[in-house]
Image: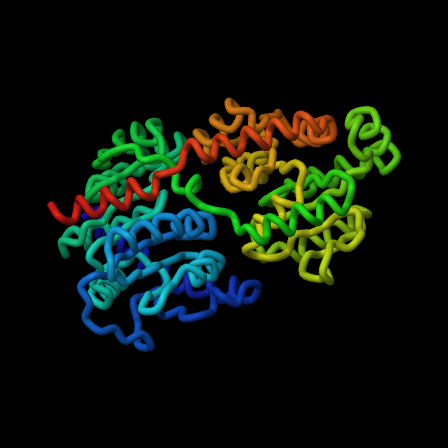
Length: 432
């Protein structure tokens, strides 16, 4: 009865979903591509019968990047497999295209109504479904169970906040988590929270993100630009709404003279006047942040307009996709977005893999284990607010930065292997 009510509500919401996609497509054209696939209609995607369709779902950009290492290991574990890659966001879809090989398939995650989900499963007939990190949808779980398709949650994480939300909707959430075939968690704390919902946790594998390799060309280019600049580059990375204004307000209040005076007193052996860079999390906000910088009295140089090298300005704006390795290589320190507003933070493992020291704000609940490990290892420092982060970024000496870079490399290397362990566990599950 409860699943029927949930399904009825989603059917009523379908026109709203279509209108939302149209609005999003105005800013991000990717949302306007193949919209009918979101509702289980695949007229333009004929599919011949195959036995080895391995379905991986990565909703957005971060999950898609994390899935790259798993997909490599799955190809080794299942020779001849055909990847079915699904996403929920345009950035995830764009990143996922880079991971496809001949014969692979890519489509949108189906809207979680019985009709859309049924058409999706009937069309692609996956041998197994692997949901990356957090994506658990009640109708999809129920339909896979009826069709005897093993549906698993991999690289699974669950924050305290998400656990409490799921418990408030226990009538809907508990059957969904309990209906999964297997769950492999990132950390013991995640496993404990997932078990509280009745999820069939089969083990703790670690985090795929440690297995991802940053683009070496981007990393070298960023480091070369930083060295040529001759002064520190400080970045607000993957920033969210409100955080850019916090930073700009601090810089505006200090003024150029005050910033230089503080830097001369604190940085000592380094050049005194830092270069600030902002890389927003969402591409639809690039123009907005450029305008905000100008409104606050700062000149802006956009990455999309650089001619071979960064161009002088008060603020560099990282307005490109798929170049985080370049930005981390270019930066002496990264202030991690999402952690200075109550949003739970973002993935700091990519920064660590690039050898970039990180400053964290107080809100890291979405990546609590990674944040704790980074702070304990010396790869990151946690501060109470943006003011403290700016002051700390200016105060770090060359020696301290060198030690943080070394700690980041050690932390990354010591936590690799989750993707391989998970692929082997999936293979073992399917041969039982």
